Image (tube, rainbow, N blue to C red; front, side):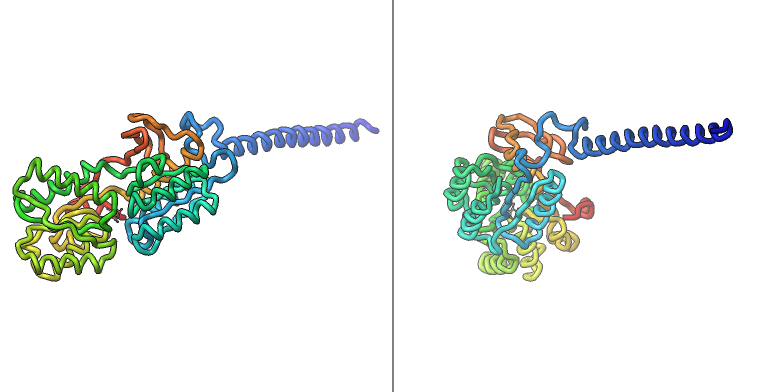
Length: 364
Ligand code: RAM
C-alpha cells in the first residue's frame, strides 16, 4: 500500500476511531444521560423529604386511594376533587373520588363497602354521620385498608387520621365575631346547617354557642334548621323561618350551599337591611351577594388545598410514614410543612375571611 494510500487510510481510520471514540464517547454520554434521566424520574439525589412520604404507593406498585365527599356535584366538593387529583398525579397514585348524589350517610356506608371490595389501599371519607359510618370504616381498617376522614370526621376509633380544615374554635368564633360586628352583638339568630348529624357543622355550632355565652350574652341561636346541602331547600327553610320569626337579627349559613341560600332568601324577602347574613361558603358562589351588599363578610378555607392534603396524608399512610405525634410536621407537596395538632389530627391552617375588598383574589 503506497504512502499516500496509507495516509488516506490513516486519516480514515482516525476518522473512524474518532467516530468510534466519538460514538464511544457519544454512547457513554447517551448512557450517562439515560441513567441521569432515570435517576431524576425516580427522585434519586433530589432535594426532597428525608422519608419516602411524597412518592406514590407502599412499594407494591401504584397505590389506589379512595376518597369520598359528603356528596358529589356541589362546588365545594368539586374543588376538593380538583386538589385531590392534583396530588394524586404528583404522587403517582390512582385516585377514586366518588360519593353519593345527596348528603346521605346510608349511601356512604354502601359505597365504603364497595371500596373495600375494590381493594383500595386507603379510604378517606367526609362523613354525613360519624356514628353511622363507623362500622364500615372499622371493617375497612380490619381488612388492612388505611383509613382517614377529611372535612367532616368519623368516630375517632373508626379511622386512623382526621384531616381538619381549621380548628372548630377558630371557625365557630370567627363566624360569631362577624355577626356580632354587624348586629352590635344583640339579637336572635337562625342557623341553617347541613344534615342534623353532620359532625363538622355540629362541632362549629357548639363552639358558636360557647363563644356567644362567653362574649355576647345578648345574642342567642334561636333555631338550627337542616338545609341538607340543597340550595333550594336552604332558600325555602330561611324564607319560612323569617316569615314566622320577623324579629330575627341574622342568619348563619353553615354549609357552602346554605349561605348563598340564606342570602338569596333575605334578598327575595327584601329584608337585607334588617337581617344580617354570614357563614361558610366558597367565594365564587357568594360573590354576587357580597357585591350586592347582602353578605358583608364570610368564612372558609381553600377546599382545593384540603383535597390535596387529604391525598398526601392517605399516601403517607400507605407508605407507612405518617407521623402520629402532636406537634410533628411533615411536608405535603406544594403546601410545604403541615402540622399535627393531635397524634391523629392534621390541620390545613387558619380559616380565611372574605370581604368585598379581597373576594376577587380567590377563584374557588
Ligand atoms: C358544605 C359541607 C362541608 C363543609 C362546608 C363548609 O359544603 O357541609 O362539609 O365543610 O360546607
